[in-house]
Amino acid sequence: MRRKTLAVTGVVCALAVASGTLGRCQRAEEERPLAMEQTVSRKVMLVAPPAVKQQQAEAPKREDAPPSPDRRALFGAKVFNADSGGTALGLRGLGLKGAAQGAGGDTVMGIGIGGLGTRGRGGGGKTSVSVPRAHVPAEPLANNTEPSSDHAVNPFVTAAEDRLSTFALDVDTASYTLARRTILEGSPPPRELVRVEEFLNYFRYTYPEPQQEAPLAVHLDAAPSPFTPGNHLLRVGVQGKRLSISKRKPAHLTFLVDVSGSMNSPDKLPLAQRSLRLLVDNLRDGDTVALVTYAGGVRLALPPTGLEHKARIHAAIEELTAGGSTAMASGIQLAYRQAMKTLDGRSVSRVIILSDGDANVGPSSHEEILKLIRGYVKEGVTVTTVGFGMGNYRDTLMEQFANQGNGNHYYVDSLMAARRIFQEQLGGTLEVIAQDVKLQVEFDPAQVARYRLVGYENRNIADKDFRNDKVDAGEIGSGHTVTALYELELKPGAGDGLATVRLRAKQPRGETASEHVYRFPASALAASFTEASQDLRFATAVMGAAELLRHSPHAERWSLEQVMKIARDATPRGNAEREEFLKLLERTRALRSPVARRGDHTAN
Image 1 (cartoon, rainbow, N blue to C red):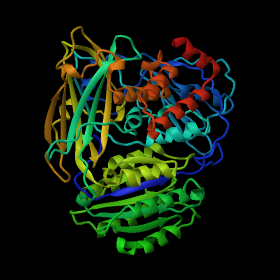
Image 2: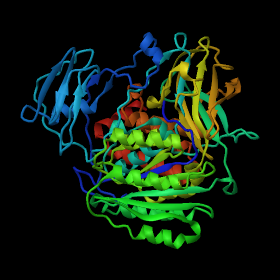
Image 3: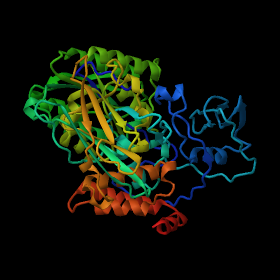
Image 4: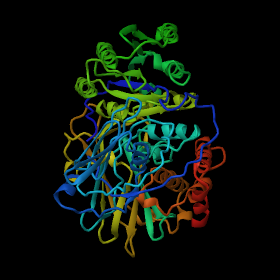
């Protein structure tokens, strides 16, 4: 479903982001007073994501999840009144029209939002939605205009009707980092930006290392849910083999840097330059670096240059300055030409693109760029994206670039984040150890009544395609870990064999996948949540926070206070990563209204 991984070499895109159209630019380290937000919710039906399994289309096996609030629909009704828009009635549906266009269609509700030069298009739904004509006072939009895909939340599935859950593994982390910056700057993240799997995979967990020559290992454990009495949580953890520096293949990197005027901000081009210098300092002999820039035109600032000329590489990075317009497509084409010069099948080649993500792509459309990326994947060149800045950051587009280019999607909001990607996890960032990695969990209907996969909504794969090696999936780099959580409704006596996990993956540049099977042991089921491992309890807190931030209908009775307590109890002293998460939860609580906070205390 995701990406085709036929080669080892690739292009990394580090994408820097323009300043906010509705707010001023601000450095990640700076803080401003927190704004209180009071949210009025409206119930709408869940919409099936485009990547749902084909079995759903054939027969309605899945049970509908409870309805969820749709803040975007509310904002559409508030901001676009009779003077600025209207309504467009479609066949069996309704589209709200902003400064763009609303039209009937096949989704439950569509919102067309137009503002500050942004066009929106809404689609109606199979079931009509009645919108009251009462006047709603205008409310300003949040200080954040990053668009993103709004995939529906996975519903509960009855195991007796569909016992298989199949998805592509994903190690992206951009959603967490972007949400962190949004919260620290005083606004809750838009629910569309919150991807549970990227929150989970941001953090480190201790999983057993793969044995012997195996590239991957699977860990299973479960415990009663602290959020929903009677339910359980199942964790599936995958650990990638760690390669030593001496075993890493040579890396040929092409940095593609957007130097247009919108990059002229401390948290964009300067931070990107510091990130690139950090990356260069962690390369080794045998690696090469090329540098391409683009604004109104494109320029080869540095041809492929070996690390023996590190001073020359640093000088080229230091000379970058921002100014002019943006033409991304031409820059990508030139970057690929440089990457092809070092393509030999025995090394890793990546291009790092720094862009505001809202580029004027010139004569090529975004779809044409994606087609170009897919074509070079077949040649052996891949793409990983890293975003910078706030405002017009196109999170969905950047994720698409990475997905189509067999790379990963990151977001850098500080030098600490850059150090994590380009220093601490450099091996996983540069070298893929397993490609087209798919996971299929089979639940025993005699022990599991219902289940739901939390997150991974845009990674779903049809069950029948699990053993189809032509179907695209995810990639795992050296030392990477992947974590997935399921919420289960167990039957009495459940334990040994309640789930069987199958993992399929290809070797880098391989054509045929190998498959390994892991059966859930009874000893992996904790009698109580407090008896569960520290890692499982912390992962539960991270999942709970993400579910609350994206207003999941399954988390309507969960509380932030409860999440904070779980995270606090699962954070050992001195673990900076987890301690930072605790502080982020405190900031999130401060953003909520007094009424919502009183509700949290009542829930406890």
